[in-house]
Each structure stands twice: as C-alpha cells, then as structure tokens.
Image 1: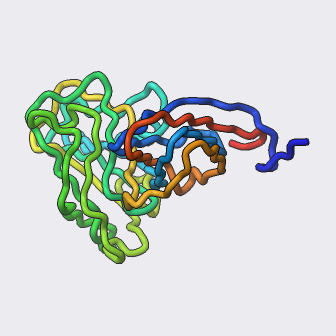
Image 2 (image 1 turned 180 degrees about the vertical axis):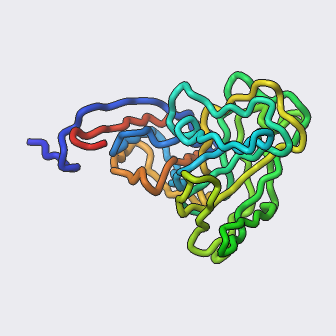
Length: 253
C-alpha cells in the first residue's frame, strides 16, 4: 500500500520537458507545487538557485515603483514590461542569496535599440537607509545581439560576491512596501530601449556551476522550499530530454 510521504494527499500534477544541452538550462519552480519528479535517460547535472523574491521597476520620469515580482517568477502570461526603459530607470532584483547572474527569458517583443545593461549590486546602506550600489565585476551579457541588450534569451553573468561583501544581506528601503532582507541588484540601460520590450521570466543563476551529478535512467523525486529557493539549473555533456513532473498536495498553498 502506498504511503503519503508529504503528509497530504496529492491533489494535482503538471508535467513539462526541458531540452538538456551543454549550455545550462534554467527552470523556475512552479508556483503552489510542493514536490518535483525528474527523469532523464542519460546522466545529467542539477543546481538549485536562490529565489527572486522581489522585483521593482523604478521609473525616473514619475519617481514611481512598479512591482513586477509575480510577472517575473509566476510562470504566467503576464510579463515584465520594460517598454522604452530610459537611462534613468532601474529594475531592482532582490534575491534570497547571492547569485552569479540572471537568466532572461525574453518575450516576442525584444529590444532592438543599441544599448548595454549597467548591472550593480547593493554594497552598503547607511543607518538612514541610503543605499550604495557598486558595479558588478566581469559581467557578460548573453542577451546581447548585435549590440542590443535584451534582444534574445540569455544569461547575464558576473562574478559572485565574496563572503562579507553584503554581510547578512541588505535591508533596502526601495519603497514603503519593500522591507525584505534580500541581496539587491539593479540594472539600467545605457540608452533607451525599444518602445515595447517584454520579459517573460527572470531566473536567478546558481552561485556555482559545480552542479550535482544525477544518474541516467533513474527517477528522482523530492520536495523543495519555495520561500528561499526559486529555480533549477541543468547541464548535460551532450543532449537529452528531462521529464519534469510537478506535484501539489492538498491542504497546502
């Protein structure tokens, strides 16, 4: 007789596939699910990335903040809208732990304007709550195509912050509703972006590419913590298909 491992009966399952290649794949956790089952016929590798817990777009023209957290990680049709993002605008990204970059799943409306992204991290904050941001090091923009950033899907990488750089996280007073103790990053474009630019997903990258080793032909199933982690990162020595089944348990949110 089967026994409930999680403590609540299964109420829903959802399946999808990930094409594994020698280029890392990024997959957000599916909201409101509690366990995942994975299978690949050949050997593969996996990493677990921190959660992107808060996304705020600051628009300089009106000094306003727009919360795009759900759009960035909710895996819905709603998208982060960076339409005509100006050089004074900022997209703030708050993660639960340091990351080495972000994967951008760009929508059908991509940027076509010549521009780069200036990525910074919060390096200090005063007792009065004034934050200092510093340029990330050794950054590389995988979303660039022909000099236009956010023109294609890709990962924007940079040097992982060393221990103590943002000791114990930074409490950022971005606005009256943002009090999360997170590791904050932000970016702005070097020139105004196209009139319509949509980002489907923003996925934190793992702190290391020393992924765990998983044996091919073996089915793996485990629970995960959606409060502190937010995505998987996969790798393969060649190519294959990873079958992913998300499992929801009744009585859980």
